Image 1: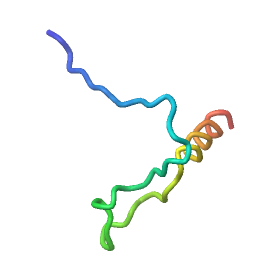
Image 2 (image 1 turned 120 degrees about the vertical axis):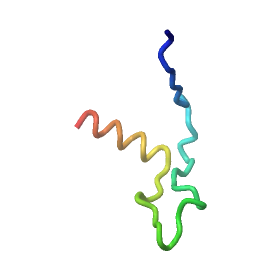
Image 3 (image 1 turned 180 degrees about the vertical axis):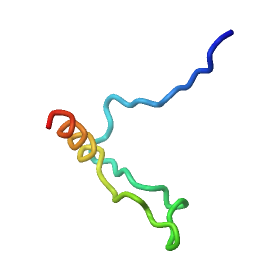
Image 4 (image 1 turned 90 degrees about the vertical axis):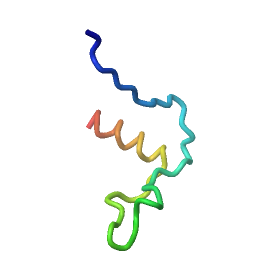
Length: 53
């Protein structure tokens, strides 16, 4: 029997100026975004800083 497989997209060289934010169709007045917008660079640098903190 073969176990179930899952795949996850992984991008090695992202555009550091790209904005990461909730999809507009998933956010409204009654369902606000849980997280603020952040650039790819801010996210990666923040995650690395937390790792080596």
